[in-house]
Length: 92
Image 1 (cartoon, one colour):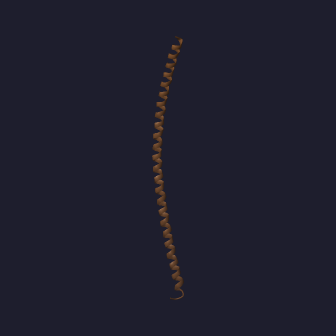
Image 2 (cartoon, one colour; image 1 turned 180 degrees about the vertical axis):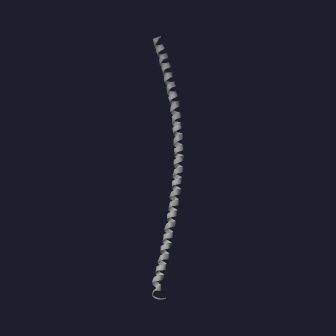
Image 3 (cartoon, helix red, strand yellow; image 1 turned 90 degrees about the horizontal axis):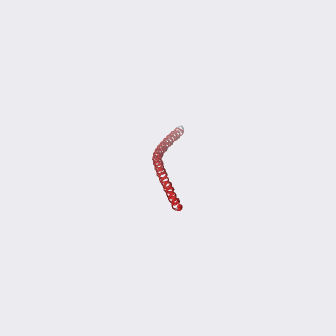
């Protein structure tokens, strides 16, 4: 080998290594991007599921509130009737 071919050889090897590193970094970047997109998709789905659960709980709470309000009204009416009946008994 001549003296000039060693530096050329070293330069070629370094260039091949540089290309290999660049390709590896690009591949890692692609993998990370795909992982991030997948994670974002999963989070979006989870968010939709949780929103549906929350909506269901809200509807259930509204129903329960109406039911409790009706029960409270009925209880108040019953207490009022009982109070009147007690007052009538006390008058006798």
